[in-house]
Length: 115
Length: 117
Image (cartoon, rainbow over all chains, first blue to last red):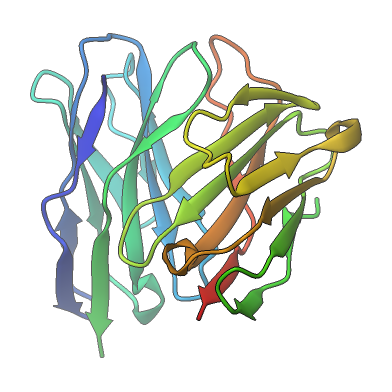
C-alpha cells in the first residue's frame, strides 16, 4: 500500500522569503503522479502543482517548483518570494496510474507567511 | 467553466439529528468523490462514483452515512443519525472520466462544514 508523509506540521516564514515543504512517499510501483494542493482558510482545495513520475524534469508553476527525487521517494515544494496569500494548509498527494483513481494524502503542513 | 458547487456551507445540528449535503460537479465530469476532512487532517475518501455507479464506498460508515448520485450528475450525502465525531468538513470533488494513462486533476468544491453538538 502507498503512504504519504509530511513531517512538518507547521512552518512560518517572513514575506518574500523562500520556503520548502517536505513530502516523502512509499510505493513499489513505477508509474504514478504526485500533487501539491493548497487549502486556504476558505477551505477550497486548490491544485498548486503536479509531477508525472516518468518525467525527470521538475515541474514549475510561477513561484512554485518541486524537487522530485524518485529514487529517494521525495517530493518537496519550494515557494519563492512568498506572499501573504500563500498562507494555507499544503497537502502532498500520490496517485497511482491506473486503478480506481484515488489520491493518497499526507497529513498536511500549515504554512504561515508573516508580514 | 463553473466550479464544483456545494451546499450548505455551514450546518450545525444536535447529535442524533440528520443532515444532507449536496454537490453539483463540473459539467461533464463523470467521476465524483465525497471526502471527510477532520480539522488538522488530510481528506479521507468516503465514496467515489463514476457516473451513477459506486466505484468505492469501503470507508463509508454505512450504518449512518448514505450517498447517491441519481442520473450521474449531482450527488447527495446524508448522515442519519449524526454523532459528535462526524463534525468535519465534507468536500466534494470531480474529475473527467478516469483513463488509465491520464492524470486528470480533481477539482474541489468549497466544502460543507458540519458541527454536531
